Figure (cartoon, rainbow, N blue to C red):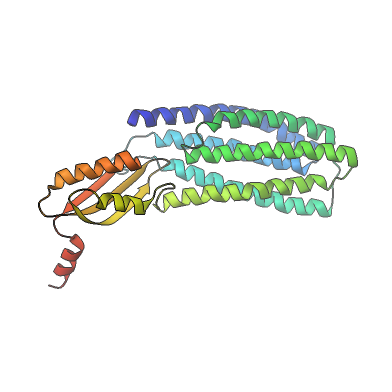
Length: 298
C-alpha cells in the first residue's frame, strides 16, 4: 500500500512539474500581450495563467512537503499540507474572479480600444499551452485534491483562451468592443461554482468531516453485523489528505466472544468493503459510556 501511494505521489509531482514549466514559460508573453492589446479578456486569461503558475508551484510544494516522514511532533507527517495548498489555490481563484468581474463592469461602461489580431494570436498560443498542461494533469486529478485544484485552474484558463479567441473574432467582424469584457465576466462566473466545490471538499477534510463517497451509516450497519458485536459507538471517519481515510470506533462485545477475533473480522470488513485500512478499533465488554456515567455518580 505504501509503495502505491508513493508511486502516485511521484506521478503527481512529475505532471505538475511539466505543467509548471509550460505555464511559466508562456506567462510573460501573455501578460505583456494583454497590456499591449488592451484586451480585458486577454488580461483575464493572463491573470488566470498567473494563478496557474503560482497554484502549480504551491501544489508541487505541497506534494514535496507532504512526502516528509512523520516525526515526534507530527505523527501523521505533513500530508495535510497538500490540502492547505488546495485551499490556497481555491481562495486565489476567488480573488482573481472578483477582480475580473469588477474590471469587466468598468470596461462595459467605458469600452477601450482593442488590438484584435494580436489578441487572437496570443490567445491561440495560450490555448495550446493550456491544453497540454491540462492533459498532463488529467490522470491524477481524481486521486489528489491538490492536483484537482491545479487542474481546475488550468482548465478554467483554457476556457478563458477559447473565450478570448471567440471575442477577438467577433470584435474583428463587428467592432463590438463590449464583447471583450462580457467574455471576461463569463469566464469569471464559469469558474466560481467549480472553485466553490473544491473549497468545500478541502474544508471538509480540514474539519475532519466524513470523506466524499464514504457512507457512515453503511459502515455502522456492517460493523454491527460482524459476529460478536453487540453495539458500536464513537464511530469516526476522517481523512488526513486526499484518498487517505482513517477510522476509529468502539465495539461492544457480545458475551463469549474474543476481542481480538472480533477486531480482526471487523478490520477485514472495513478493508474489503470500504477500502479503509487505517483503523483503530477498541473492544469493550461493557459500553464505556455507561461505565463513565456510573463512575460520575460516585
